[in-house]
Length: 164
Image (cartoon, rainbow, N blue to C red; front, side, top):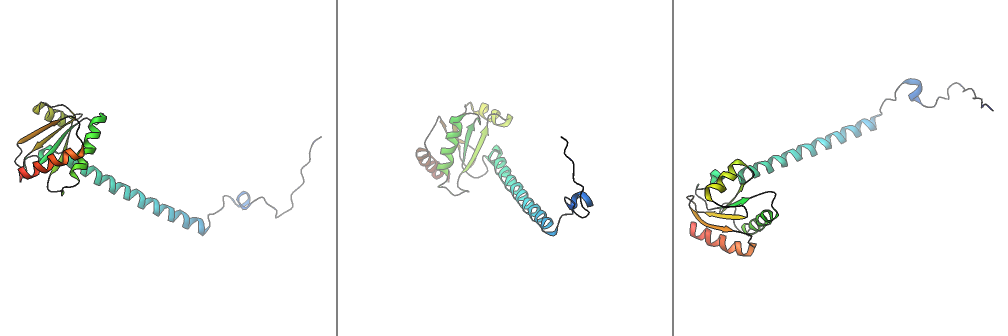
């Protein structure tokens, strides 16, 4: 059996959308879009600002030309794909956290970059190594292998005292 459709009465449309074209957004929806857009803009700009700060810090940490510019320096020969290098970096940063920022510089010679690889080759060292330079840029100590932060803190304190 075939179903028959009942004819619609005038004025009983399904929605305003079908009769009058697309429905216009009301004021509440427009304000919601504006609010969400403003929040999104602030979040995006804040993320960009933080990323720029992080990039600047990363670039400064990898600037090996800072050796010999009046501050003692700790340089880590680092392979970012090496878990031992990452662990040594964590321990070195922990040991350096007790110093003021201007007392000792911490730099990274990333052997995956041309500059870092050339630096390591020039000094004849492999990754998982810390090198301690005095304020004039003279190499004072080479510490190969993994070290704990407690041991490093004592070494860095002696290095800072000798370099001052």
